[in-house]
Image (cartoon, rainbow, N blue to C red; front, side, top):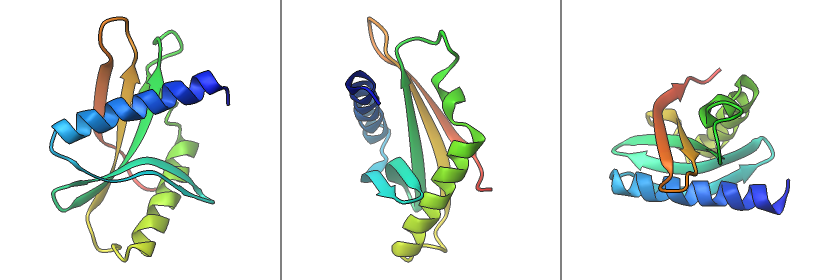
Length: 121
């Protein structure tokens, strides 16, 4: 992955963290990595654990950023979330999967927050 794409992704994640914090979510972990994959942000929404995937684009020329969260990516996130819940002994806690799509524009980033974007498979 190019440095430009890594930088864009990090910027999008920073924007998403600011957005979530302002919405009252508690940030727990950023960039949770395991062999099964990575979860960009893990937050608490009250008593619910939320696994957040962030997709960032400069334009929507190739579709909305959220469309990049494919079934394969959803499976990868689900497996990694299961790993997190198991390691933290939180298997009985309510959990969900959100997607935050960030489009970087000249004026201000456009943010779309899809709550409960997908279910585990």
